[in-house]
Length: 254
Ligand SMILES: Nc1ncnc2c1ncn2[C@@H]1O[C@H](COP(=O)(O)OP(=O)(O)OP(=O)(O)O)[C@@H](O)[C@H]1O
Image (tube, rainbow, N blue to C red):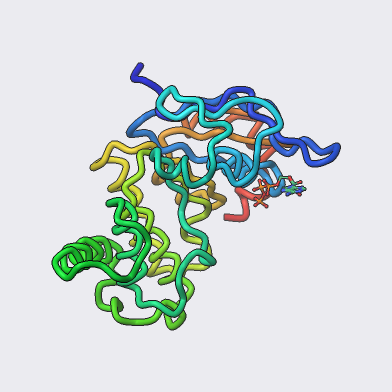
């Protein structure tokens, strides 16, 4: 087995008396896409928040490439290669699509977050930004202000900005939520490409069964914050634990 890229060891968080993530131990490898599923309130987003550092763990550890990052800041984890899809609130609504991506490309190359750069590097950065925008098919909208984009295109821009960061680990929380039927495949194709082309580790919180079936190499099921199942998608989805106790109604609805 190859070295684990990301590990959580006995990871837990308590909010008052409520244990939202309960002693979750799991290991994630390169080239593997793991879907994280479970009923509403199961702890999926909280597990993501613990991994990316948005909230501190009550106990347990998070390791990236063997290094303990449990106490590192969000920014430091990002710098070390942990990439979480940007929330829409992190977009700059008054800047253009291309400028938003450029800022990320620029930061990734350690030039700092500034719109002002030397002319030669400016062209270089803009070219890098355009390449990413072409991949999510937002290149024709490059000069539009982000505030003028549809919700679906704003979410595509989030994905573009994440790709521009080129992290080792991609974390997507329902990446196609709010997208129209013709917008979603662009993002799903990109996620599939990331997995094969770049040999990246991908974590995907997802409710849509068709998306899980298409993309997941592995499924982990959370229930009441704890790991209820972990393994091959076909076996996990067929298991009694998922069908009857944990996922029943939600999956049938899809
Ligand atoms: N900051 C917080 N303070 C108190 N309780 C919280 C906090 N964040 C999450 N919770 C609780 O922890 C539990 C897990 O929530 P979480 O959002 O992680 O679930 P989820 O599986 O992502 O659900 P959904 O599918 O609905 O998004 C819920 O009971 C939620 O109310």
